[in-house]
Figure 1 (tube, chains in turn green, red):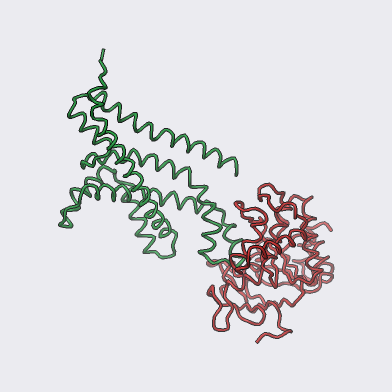
Figure 2 (cartoon, rainbow over the protein chains, first blue to last red):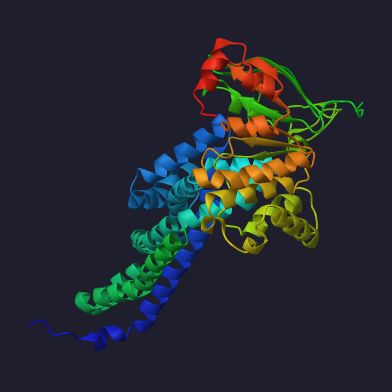
Length: 220
Length: 254
């Protein structure tokens, strides 16, 4: 029978908390940047210019069709060789995470906008609104409602994806757990604590997402 | 120069193609002040396309449209004596078959949105006007309801009020009763009839022959992208000349 010993590991509680904080910061940062990138890519894909559509589509396919871990390694180890500069791990990590989630967000945003009935933009246009006005006052408010469940879902996945940054030694929760384990030789306790911390962060979020989705369906 | 005798809307040689499909093959038409034009025709005859060209929801392939003596340009903004698409649509209101009310806005907000955003009317002014219009269509008590809680007939009456809120010179009605349950058609037609009585200039695509006979002062029969017959409703609807129109009319019980 395994004998649990949380005491040894709890000596390193500050490392866990530090990792948790970093996980939160990388998540929040990459989601914020991802939203901006996603919006740009989304509107590029909806634009009338072939070049913009092509560029956005290429970006999306590259980031959606390669594993995030490979992207992170590539940005940290390979890209500096091309550019001839060193890229700090936190920059490579944050940028890659943002580009990765942005490619998914773009698709979620585009889906939401396209899901708004065509008659809506026609009705708005018929009152003399310009394209930006139609987008702002009629399409986006309705599209946001349609895209929120998928957006929250993707953001939950993003919290977990930050754990891949351990591979380039970014001090987020998984990496810190790896460090604590290395010092204490207590993998059972270390990784259990990490799992519980992730769970505590994500369970309320998914729960909120479900309730939110049900509320949205009711008001339709 | 615009003069008092200029037609409100004037259409010359209007053509519309979708790829190789020619939907409108050269339409000439004047809409004078106070005209209520009924547009009838079999499905695929181009009547919806025609009315949608009048406010540039569809861009014509060839031909010219003028509003109050000014030709409609292709840009959104008016410039160089040409009227832009934005101004055109402010002057020409449209009501759709499927209402297209904004589901995320209340009835009142549906109506005030155009005037406040496009015409920059102050909110209290727009609200006051909207309430007047809502009373006219008999829905003042629904001001704070959301569209999804209204019946089809009520939705369409709100949609009419929404178009009127822009104080248009012309109203376009594109089969506005076709999506309604039969018992709800009457309340919408009544609202339109009152507009005609008040002298509103309008064009309506309709399958309600009795209604067209009642309120229109002129009827055109579109067939194969042409105006096949036109004239007073008594002539066109009661004494059709062509076999096509006779066959078409025989399908309606009157």
